[in-house]
Amino acid sequence: MERKTPLYDCHVALGGKIVPFAGYLLPVQYPAGVIAEHMAVRTKCGLFDVSHMGEVVYEGPDALANINKILTNDYTKMDIGRVRYSLMCYENGGVVDDLLVYKMRDDKYLIVVNAGNHDKDVEWMKEHLFGDVSFTDISDDIAQIALQGPASDTIIAKLTQDIPQKYYSFIDNVSIGGINALLSQTGYTGSKGYEIYVSAADAPAMWQNLLDAGQDEGLIPCGLGARDTLRLEAAMPLYGHEMDETVSPFEAGLGFAVKLDKAFIGRDALLAAGEPKRQRVGLKVLGRGIVREHQDVYYQGELIGHSTSGTHCPYLGGAYAMALIAANSVKNGDIVEVDVRGRRIEAEIVPLPFYKRA
Image (cartoon, rainbow, N blue to C red):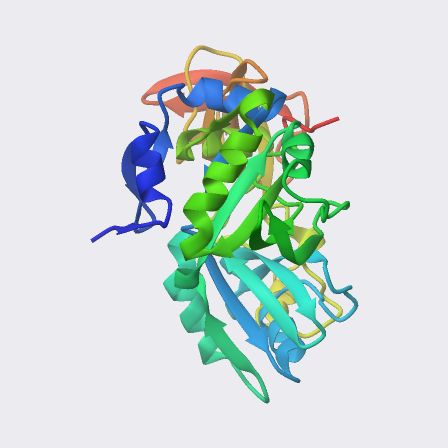
């Protein structure tokens, strides 16, 4: 049985087309449509309900030691008020999930996990707890709203003066239009933006405050459809597509978040594996058609891998995809073929990300 986020009634009132996703009922799009929502985020601003994401808290003298053990990134030197991306790996080096860590205090960390992985992540984290630390799953108490797009600065400034100035930084206990929240400069769209963590009870009022503040700035509500086209256009990886328990962080092109000079679960396997045998690449589709996931990729007639995600990217005006292929089998500018329902479509290997904001 799918659950409703605290903003469910808001989506219905705004004409959102509700679909089941990661155990929740969420809007896939609003009447404006996916393309208009996508373009709003690139040129003006969009508002997303991301309350389906999970949030857990590590607190206590051994909080840092715990997260350093289970996460690939290093949190030893990190300022309070900063956010850092990481992978969480199995012993074999495959990925449990990718997530964000917020440093609240020296002994307190908020971790945001993917909705579809929530139960698995919490179980894994609990299994590996040690020392003097408390672990709390606060997912049901927290709503998360994403304000994304170039007008986000103007909109948020109408509601608060306490605005995080750096990408991947946050301020806790901010009053946004009179509602207490955590405000972070983060997002999953590739555009400038903010994510707002608020109590579930305050979520509808916060949503309305943001819509009202953005009324003159072109702000519109956006659904899951645009969230996916935006993240793909920005070449942001998605668990279950670009990575999973069979793909290592290095194969997924996420080595920047792996610090092999510290101990963590999966390190030994990653070291033993040596140079990655596969790599994530970008494809610009040249032929007619859309490349989706799990479609075979060929170079000079030889099968070299498969696509992991693909769609039409409205802002760039073309079809793009990411693929996991044999390492060093192609270079940028090479032309490959993708099997789309029995038809071979040409695509060019291009650098990632496809879109990067100025």
